[in-house]
Image 1: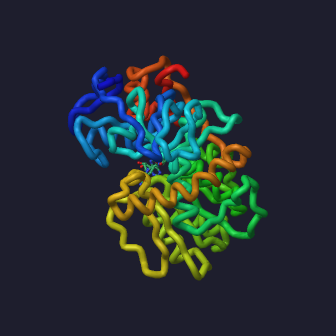
Image 2: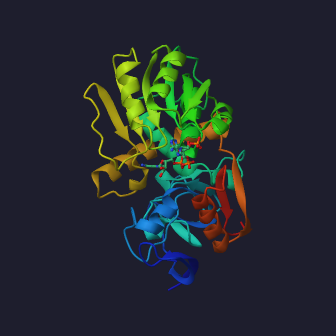
Length: 349
Ligand SMILES: NC(=O)c1ccc[n+]([C@@H]2O[C@H](COP(=O)([O-])OP(=O)(O)OC[C@H]3O[C@@H](n4cnc5c(N)ncnc54)[C@H](OP(=O)(O)O)[C@@H]3O)[C@@H](O)[C@H]2O)c1
């Protein structure tokens, strides 16, 4: 059996180990075998190493944002062919599908095909963040993104994005703006420019007290909002109180990247939680729904990325090429040194 290099983790909190003994997979009918060229680092990567969250098998191979080139496709593939550049969020926790190895499998329905206007490194910033934001805003809050990559006419309505400065939050700000909404985003004061660069109209301080944040939301929106998205996991109380006490809408929506804390959302508010980590878990109800929603949304997102109405987020590339650099990239994220999305080049094209 052909083997390849990559990073394995033997169990929760065990170190990252570079090995040369990982079996190489063959694509199923609607799958492609992809050579990993670059990866983006996400908070879930160190979380998986420390706790094993979402890991389905040990030793685990992790990774949550990939950019690569197709080597081989299964007989029923219609979208992808060898030589195509692809990127996206993998089936997190399932070893054959995760990108911290030379090659891995993707399901073609949930892979993004790279357009010529994007570089490989840029696409490594997109998959998990954009898909999560899209699921929350489009599947979870009924926003409509044009199918042809155009920007919707401006609406006289606000959306509030808590954490419009993080990767998921920046994509959420972009999507909301492209859908025509006025966007009020929160962030730490030194990073508010990041949200503005992505299309926010106004920002407020995410580290202020709950009452101070509510006062800002009320003042900027005048109550003219029905939707709040928390892209930080710190914003549940602000979301509920803002919708209950500041919003004048009749139908209200709350969405969150926090899919693990107990929520007790009032019945008057529609709740949606991101479950991007369940992608391609076809035998689990949430996984099947997320995979179906992702497959439906990705062609529209590709059209907007090709048109430049949605853009990769700003990023920094770790020195070097290969698995040692990936491990350094995870360390940089954990230490809080990075101020932008971290991208690591893994192999030459
Ligand atoms: N459930 C899912 O399917 C799913 C999918 C993707 C991500 N996630 C989770 O979503 C979160 C964001 O992911 P990401 O990739 O966007 O991470 P990120 O780029 O590191 O962004 C983190 C965001 O959280 C904000 N933040 C950090 N500490 C805060 C605090 N004490 N109070 C308020 N805001 C705070 C940051 O604000 P500043 O930068 O302005 O300080 C930033 O906006 C992570 O927890 C991740 O694990 C969940």
